Image (cartoon, rainbow, N blue to C red):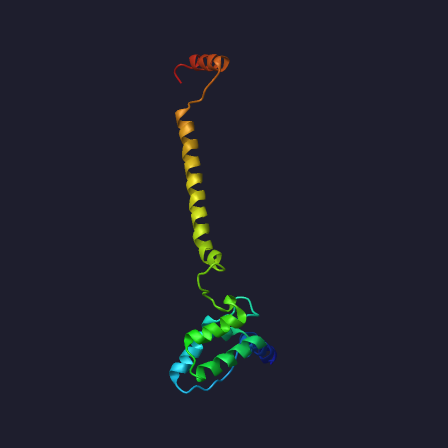
Length: 165
C-alpha cells in the first residue's frame, strides 16, 4: 500500500515537469484560402524576429507584439500582398532588426563582415604564434650553450676527471 501512495504524487510531478513547457507554446489558428498561403505564413513566422524578444522568431514568441505581427502577417497574406511587400512593411515599421538575415548595406556591413574579420585575425594570430615557436626552437638548436671562460674551464675539468664515463 505504501508503494501506491508515493507513485501517484511522483507521476503527477513528472507529468507537470515534462508537459509544462507545452502549455506555453503559441497556439493560434489562422484560416487560409489555400495551402500555399499557409506555407508562406509559416516561412515568414520562422524568418521574422520578434522586436521585443532577443533572438526569438515570431513563431516561438508569446509577446503581445509578436501576436500583433502574426495577425498583421495573416491579414497581409490573405490580401494577396507579395513577399517583398510584407518584408518592406515589417522593415519600415521595426527596422532591419526584424529580419534574421538583414540586407548588406552601410548599417549592417560590420554585422556581415565581422565573421570574416575575426577569422582573419584568428589566422593571423595562429601564424604569428607558430612562427614565434619555430624561431625559438631554431635559436635553441643553432645557438649551443655558450659558456664563459671560467665555466668552460670547469666543464673541461669535470669531463677530464671521468674520461671513461
